Amino acid sequence: MKKALKTAPRGTAFNYAGQRWVVLEHNATGTLCLTEKIVEDRAFDDGNCNDFSKSSSLRYLNGPFLDTLIDAAGCSGAFLTSELDLTADDGLKDYGTCNVTIFLLTVDQYRRNRDVIPNADDWWWLSTAFSTASNGYEHSARCVYTGGTLNRGYAYGGIGGLRPACNLSSDLLVSDSTDSDGCYTVIYNQAPTAPSTINVPSEVIGGENITVTWGASTDSDGNLAGYVLEKKVDSGTWTQIYKGSSRTYSVAVTYGSTSIQFRVKAYDAAGAESAYTTSASRTVINNRAPVISCLLY
Image 1 (cartoon, one colour):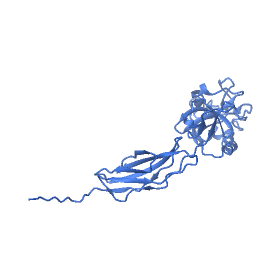
Image 2 (spheres, one colour):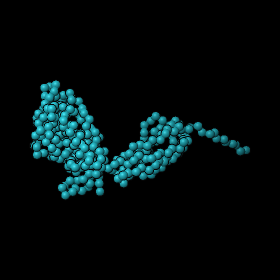
Image 3 (cartoon, helix red, strand yellow):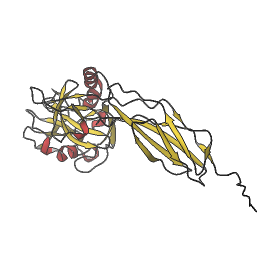
Image 4 (cartoon, one colour):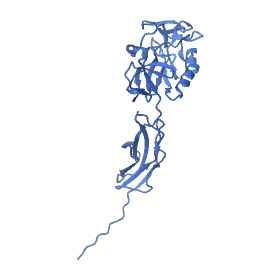
C-alpha cells in the first residue's frame, strides 16, 4: 500500500533519489524536505560572499548535486522550482529572492521546523545572511551548530557542510511501512494524461439537456481514479458539475444564457491531476418554435 507524500506527518524520514530526507512542512507548491545528514563539507561561497543567489554552493547544489539526484530518481519531475526569500536575519532585503531547485534552508524555515529537524554531527550552512554587504557584513553567512543553535561564520569556510533542502512534489507516493532501517520509501507518482477529447453537441438549446462525453486518460502508475467535469456559462467562472469514473454526463442548459463551454481533467488515487481538455464554446439557442393551439367546437 502507498500514500501521497502530502499526507506524511512532519518529521517523517524517507529514502528518495539516493538521500534520506525529513519532511518539514507541506505548502502550496509541494513538501519542504531536508536531508537528514550533511552531504559534504563545502564552503558557502568560494569567494567569501554571503549572498546565496551568487554563491558557489548554489551553483553546486543546482548543478552536479541535482544531477546526481535526478540520476538516482530516474526522473526530474519530483524536484520543484522554489522562490527563496533571502531577507537577512536583521531584516535587510538587499539580496531579494532567487529561484532554485535545491537550496539551503532560510533562517525562518529553520526556526519554523526546528522541532522536527534532527541535529547533525557538524555545523551546516543556512541561505539567509546574518546581515548584508550594505551594512558591512558581506562575508558573514549563517550556520547551525551541532546542538542546533544559530551562529555565523566566514562564507569561504569549508569545515562546515551543506545540508540540502528542496520542495518535492506532494504526489510522490510513500510506502505505508518502514524498511529495516526504519525509513519509508518513496516512488514518484506520475499524473494521468489529459483526456484525449471532449465532445459537446453542436446544437445547444436553452432549457433542454445535452450529453457531454470525453475520451479516456492513461496512467503509467495504473491508479487512474476518475474525471472532473466543469462548465462555464457566458462570462462566468468555471464550476465543477461532475466527479467520478464515468466518461459521459447529462447537463441541463440554462434558458436565457448565451453561451456554454466545458472542460475535463483526470485524477488518480494519489490526488495527481492531468491538464484540462477544453471544448469549444457553444452558442445557446433560446428561440423556441411557436406552439399552435386549436379550439374544438
